[in-house]
Image (tube, rainbow, N blue to C red; front, side):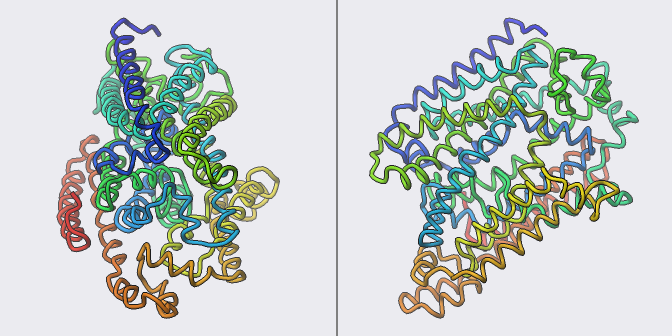
Length: 603
């Protein structure tokens, strides 16, 4: 496939703009660590919201969605659609708590909520565990997608893609810091959306597919269209729908969808002007992320089933693809090779935009952990602001090198998604409850983190997993593996919680007074308080979580209704589309009323 002059023009202009922004903000970003990692906490809700969306618009996401749709149908997307519940809980319950904490990173929270050496250890260990290990794995999945796109669309060797894409991204990230990331995300969002929508429209109408009606009628596609799984298929119903909605959304830690907020979502909430802007940014992100974006990717995935019905057809069309990189996720890139000149340039620019946005965010977020939560705490507590920025830039480069090396060893996006879910299984409940239950301590989190990781390793890498969960021959049904990890991990951290001493009264009262989370889970702290009792009790009476949960449920109904109404309009199923459109309108009206009762108009 050859690019035209017009295609190159789009790509060169895009790169020039992005690097120009990085150089432009490099001076102010390098002034101090707060500017480099949080942009001075002055960001408005709409800019942060767009940045969150752009960040999750990574190159591996359309590949992941394509893999899911081709393997399990549209309903297979419930494995990530379920995280909308997590997102809405963050919007209406946790966003204001994070912004009130005023920490530099979400890991700094540990030494606010917990005390002593366990809290210090937890903060440092999580800095390495999340900032380096988990972060490198996540970035490697994104880079793997870039490798596949480069291989299919440009005929590049994996190392060529890694070097060219990584060099530009790491240069921009090290120069511009968080402000550069957020400013360019504004541009990247619109480029990425234009590319995704333009590609979907064109590819559905190519002669091989024949338009939307022919696509919907194709016998290979028709069985993949259901938004809800086949209720007569017990295994599909349990694995694709019941487990994600009943267990996964609250029990698993996953980057970008952390129960109780966290990671780069928390970083953006902490960078907001105030609590209202933090809430507005997070709500805006969830609307755009779930209600607007999925369908262009899904349409291309469905069209790919017509053009490339199996892996053999992909291998035949692209014989240069090596066996270790062959998978259903390649179908998205394969479809993009059919785009015409001009649109091809826009789409390639949009994929580069998606890659740069995600990687630059992960680099800045991961290096913020290394700087604030490891280097400054463990190595050089008296480091100057200039030194902290320098360490941030060096760690940015090192993280990029590690992730690029790992990407060369991986095969597909769904493989990484499953691994990350398993490693975080059972830990999510702690991140939800630690704000509202005084008894949770640092040992609760330490135990949960190690238990989840060790159990996952045993089940994934030893014969124990096959013995317990092998299809047809396992002691337990294969679909119960995730639930097994969650239940066992939860039991272990609960036992550890009650076997260890609670945090000191001073630590608990200090946290409560600063954050004012309220609720019955803090009744002991309130009753035991010998100082500030009137203030604490007064705040306790204002507990807003029940109203927040009501708003959360209405938000979930609103966004799911919009997302699925859009799908049914595309499918041509008018009755279902009209019903869901009406439901979304009613849910929207009720949500506005609920939110006004909860806090007032955030905008």
